[in-house]
Image (cartoon, rainbow, N blue to C red; front, side, top):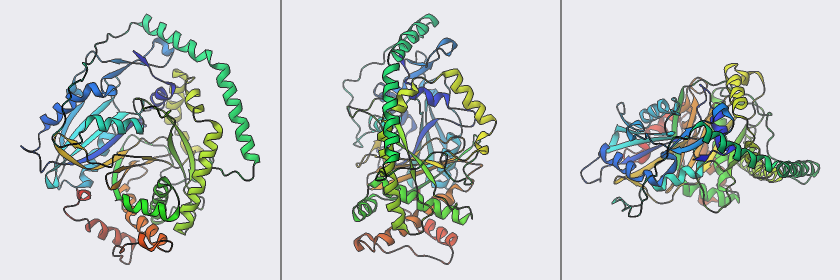
Length: 499
């Protein structure tokens, strides 16, 4: 039995019928070189073999009576793999858009809290002897870094697989009684109360740091919550989700980073900013004020990442009000530096420490009331969207002998911010997953199609600083819409991005 941290539990309390708090990834695998060919049973057997290595896949929630404290995790005594691993056939012709349609349908359904909070879907029938793999896990169980570690446990570094010689058996655990749950909760609460004065003291110092920073004219700052302009995707959300994918070369991202002396994350944010700017321009909905993104940041101690959430967040400007790509990326870099300074002034653990005080009943009721009354439509957006950047493995991964050729991560959305962009590097590519509320972003592939144009724009601009960054631009037609059609059709049939 293990108590959820306040931050982990917060993702449970924030969940509403319209807002599902799970993270997901859509991967594409090439089974053409697998001896004996693709086999769903083989994939399922691999997942079963690795279960002891992935604790979040074995544990389920148990609520404390009267919601006296945060729930606990226990090893599920009734675990059944058939409840978690499923198969479905992709509609013809089995390309990325058809795969994304299924991924959106999977993301639209909440996870069953009576079971371990994860599902895996094998999508058969993709082009070029490939299959898709969609896995979703509740955010209360993992954050981005923990999710990346799950990949390394679940998948292999070699197509031949690996021999797991010292895997411990999954321990059995009984469902705790109400008395046990209440007793354990009382002890946990006592530990929280014992730190009350320490937390208040740390918070007071944080407030003093913030005030000092505001008074310091030399200090840079990030964006301010509740100052974001309204866009078509900033409204109350519904349960349906749409998904789209894009990818760019990692070497180009690194070349831009080096040429401009900025961070890789700044280049990623600039790419997202340019993409959003072009999408909103096409919809005649680009605000005069810059969009504001929330970017999760890790607050782990660096001594190994455990399951669960060790994250905080920064607010940064996307500088979408700036026409020039070079000025925009430097403005973003300046804002992210300021946002990190603001975050450091507050204290990396302040948010997670105060989350321990979240009252389950009050917090959950407030979230459901906010959602059901569509209150997100009645005030200025807190932020416009969430953009997450998760470093992935630079080497190939395999599942049951099949090589993973692409991995598109997807994060949750929330009321008032119906779009999430999650980015992960994998091998020599940067894979981008777009997830949006279908009602607010019905044309999500139009958004994803803006990535290539936005990236070309950045590269051409950076070429004035470092000509080696620029490559031959893609053909451009008279209108942006026609250019997107051409770019979509220009993907080589043997490219991983084509399926």
